[in-house]
Length: 277
Image 1 (cartoon, rainbow, N blue to C red):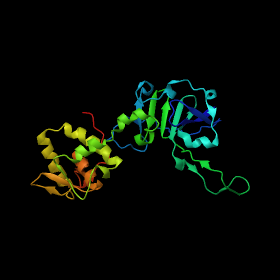
Image 2 (cartoon, rainbow, N blue to C red; image 1 turned 60 degrees about the vertical axis):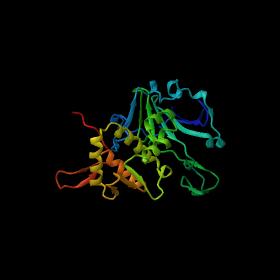
Image 3 (cartoon, rainbow, N blue to C red; image 1 turned 30 degrees about the horizontal axis):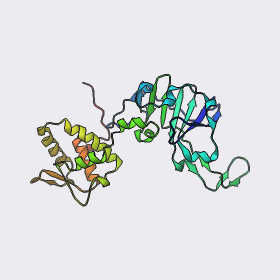
Image 4 (cartoon, rainbow, N blue to C red; image 1 turned 30 degrees about the vertical axis):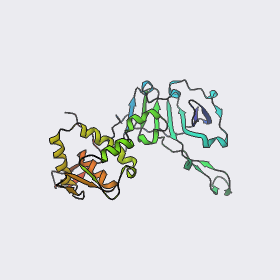
């Protein structure tokens, strides 16, 4: 038997039983063996998943995964309780926990026509949308959490934000105040979105490892690949006035730009995977 349960918001360990059935609730990916250790610099291929091994013993796990599953412990959910749900989890094949975060757009309240049997208009019968593939899978037999996008699961596993590394307001402001940056057009930390805050966090770590001579080389590299970034030779600063400027500056710091040997074509690497020697 397979079960779908729902975690209640703002509680430590309160779950509702939604339903049980013989068929799987979520489709299980057949490529979970092809995993990568999480790296903010790496962009997954379609057949790849990030994996955190020995997950139940990590700081990222939740108590629910370390307890024996018993459906009888969970009260049946009622319709007016769905707005208190934080995430859904299915327990499948006595091995897999499949997770999907809950957002209000998952519930659709519209007039719709049932195509089962005689067509009939349905009103005031909201439906809940479940994804075909879950956002994360925890497999007991391998003690591994598999996921595609960290931002999709940070509300499910709060401590996993340690991997997320989104720059704080203070870190963002300090980075924007770096001696090689000149802000203009009113651009400041309030204009920096989540994606660029993650990039800032990476750039801070990268810059901390560079010698001064290497920083000069990086500046020349950025000037070469990012002519749209105005550079002051007098002040030795790049002018940053919008999100695109900031993104390209950080891509330069991370040395994401390259030129092909054949064709001399300039390109941007969407992801980076360090090669072993």
